[in-house]
Length: 421
Image (cartoon, rainbow, N blue to C red):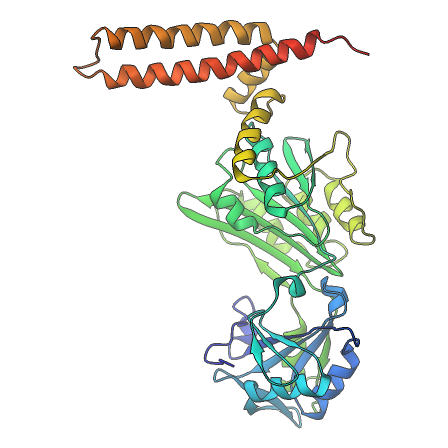
């Protein structure tokens, strides 16, 4: 088991700069689970400085999580009458714990140690926060329908979505999460950013905000974890071992970098918002300008397991498309046939045309005819600065765009003229 560089350093906690940690997840199986109390007793018997959490509170029912303090060389830190001293290498401790508990132990989400000491790669499904509910939000635009389809395709399950107060909101099915940073940097354009997520997994809460400053990705993260039990075998309150164990169990996270995308008042508010489970989602949503009701929806979704929890007027469910090609094609159709949203001038112009399909058809015909005229001119020897390709390029664009708008206008006209029942 490699220990050269323990993953879980704590850069956001200056008081933990001299220490690192390993996160051990004890998975349940058909014979049962290792309870937090049972694991805490095993760690106390070995004088290990650690913190223990119930997987139910982290969105992984049945699991038990231990955060083990280690030094820079990967040796487990022990409690010696309140002092912190290095003990055995962590690669010796973990197989022993796996054998004693009879459970598979996941180390830092990267390695699984079986009760017999064998090692394997973790199964992502076993580590998934199965009770997590996540709401994704971005600025509503004409691209929103296509983006929703991309999310549904990636999730492989129906997702709920709605546009509210200039935001597109997507509620993911329970247990499904989204790499919002990648989504914001690869699929979402400048008019849709920022991408904000609100998540509840068990008793933990998390908020992320993703944007870009020129070519630099900017991320805000806020997290409030569930309660943990510090493991201090011998140290009295206030000892170095006790303070380290308490710090390990404090999984609060606040990353608020300077960015021109947020004004000074908002940045100050994010740096001051209490990282409390009961209030984090509501407070952060208000600061970030999200619709006031969305945080309450995420909170309520964590107390049950509703299949449809985006309880807002106009919310609809979108099933995933069978292929990525279908996602792209149907996303384009949605952006043309659904009422365009967004505040940009082009979006407002498309919305004006969407409500006037006769005008849309007329303009589309003119655009297509202009494209044909440019093509005829190019075929007859016409050029721009001695080159014909600019004419051919403009002609192709005008014809394709005009014909697509013409089809959309005709479909919209037929929809409006269809008799109501």
